[in-house]
Length: 149
Image 1 (spheres, rainbow, N blue to C red):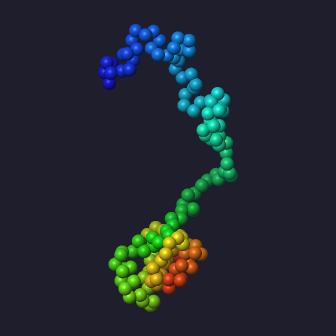
Image 2 (cartoon, rainbow, N blue to C red; image 1 turned 180 degrees about the horizontal axis):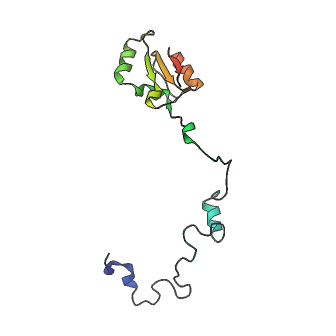
Image 3 (cartoon, one colour; image 1 turned 120 degrees about the vertical axis):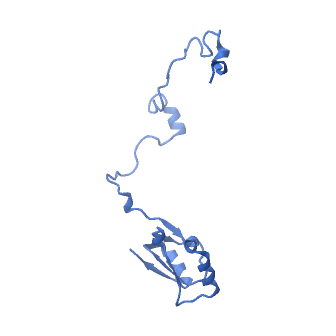
């Protein structure tokens, strides 16, 4: 940006350039960044950021995130894993002997949760885990839950 466009051009000829004679414009009078959160900026931190300092809970030294990796899906989204044509053909003529099989683990989903409504179509759902509600709803629709590993 050229000099003529800087705000400072308007302050030429005025001794302190808008920063006052007594206090003076110094570099970082309060410290840089978040300095002084426990000292001279304590009131601001307590007022606007309560709980910023300190610790909570137990330490876990070597967290292995893949052990707690558990992508989930709700029942209302379960049929979105397979093509629409399969659902439409199943609804048109439900067959208990040839139920549609939805293998959630192939789609990277390990746990089935119970939110939503399933269509009254027999379906076999394969997953690593099911909630009680999900299991109840799948069985009420005439389906079955299979545990995979």
